Image (cartoon, rainbow, N blue to C red; front, side):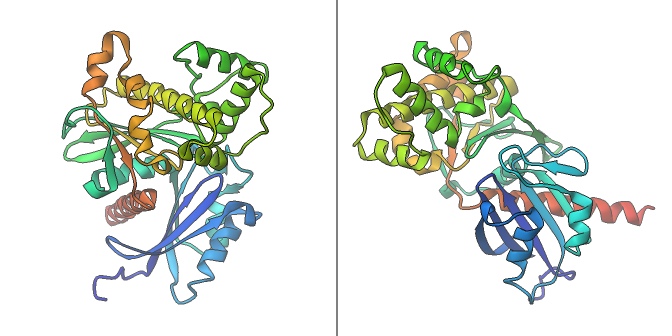
Amino acid sequence: MSDNYQDGARLLADIGGTNARFALQRAPGRIEAVATLQSAGYPRFADAVRAYLGRHPDQPVRHAVIAIANPVDGDLVKMTNYDWEFSIAEARAELGLDTLLVVNDFAALAMAVPGLPGTDLVKVGGGARVPDGVIGLVGAGTGLGVAGLIPSGGRWTVLQSEGGHVAFSPGDRREQAILDFCWQRWEHVSAERLVSGPGLSLIHEALATIKDVGEPVRDPADIVERALEGSDALCAEVLDVFCGMLGTVAANVAVTLCARGGIYIGGGVVPRLGEWFARSPFRARFENKGRFSNFTARIPCFVIHAACPALSGAAVLLEQHLAHEEAHHAHA
């Protein structure tokens, strides 16, 4: 097609601790050939990229962007929640790319938010969002992602964050007891320890120990399934606790950023909860902010239900990067 990129398709990737999602972008707004690979199936990051590109030998790629669940600072990338480690420069050379842009996954998700259609969002409480207000993002998956989106001169600037690693803040005595349980293992208990997929299993283990009931260790998917079908009271309590904890995290982000543009919730856990999430303790906890309760009560929260939103945000960041490089070379 005439609107295809003249220098070939662009590779987009969203790399988490569990899944590695890939896609090709042949033209603006056209993200195709989306595929999800299990990270554990590949010894190295470059191996997963090669495996995906091997499925599309007729699509030469010169430019790529990788949104990764990790801070990106310098050339060396070492994942927090998985054992991949790589040099950006070496990976670019090995894969034969002209451009390999590596960005934080929540920075990519943030950049996708302004372009999300209303059909991909489910509102959970609050009033109307302020159109030019700061936006906050949180998301529980393999880890806990946090980011901000700041309006500036008609454009959006991403505020990258590792806010998932702040100290966990209990919201009631039960959560304090769970924190006491965690302190037996870790000197520092981050919010991510509990407000994440693996955190569901940790909350389950803590509550079983506190209640002195002989419960087996359960994986996150099993806990969610049992809670939603109403077959397991302890799993239902775990999900209640988790959503309350997420409400605290989201409210902290809201007041920290003055996020009058709304709080958007991504990640792999919450979208799977469906309508149950709206009835959960999340919103009550979000609005329970003491002297700032009226402030948070006005802020709307939205659950993101788009299939792979970080890929479209990563595409925007790559487009901006390439435009900046072209302008730089034009003035050199």
